Length: 114
Length: 111
Image (cartoon, rainbow over all chains, first blue to last red):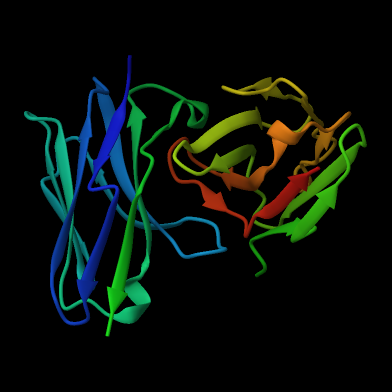
């Protein structure tokens, strides 16, 4: 069964610190992996997207990595800010599938404190 | 550009009553989706529409219906609400299979 597992479930860090969120998936083959950020009370917004052939993608202080061999992805946040407090969702698109087949992780809730 | 709008923002509904959640997009995307998001379960697909005039069932369609009379609108109807339908509902649209744009959500409480 295609699954996307994220860890940790929640995380608390101090402002200015770095952190790494993990995403393990069993979806195979897949066409791309995307990280979404969801602020409290808002809809998810795309942060990065990587195809199966890409290893890394950056968006400002956010850097996503992908290891297709081990089926693992990570999202690294550098010099965290209070505004980074949100839920981060890993989403995998199976190959040759329509948008109805997206596999969502349950998300990691990040809290950045001052 | 507004993107995707949803209405209402929140609603408290008595069990057994019907309700329609509205979703409108101005990006001319062909595909639209309805998800529910529950604590600990993540986003689950309820119904979808690949193009105007067509709809399909997602992972959790029971108790919900949709219609797609035109490209911009994709309403979700609960014919007879039950407490288990208490959730946050997100509408999304896409012009490609993988990049979905989400609305702000509707928080529904069924008592």
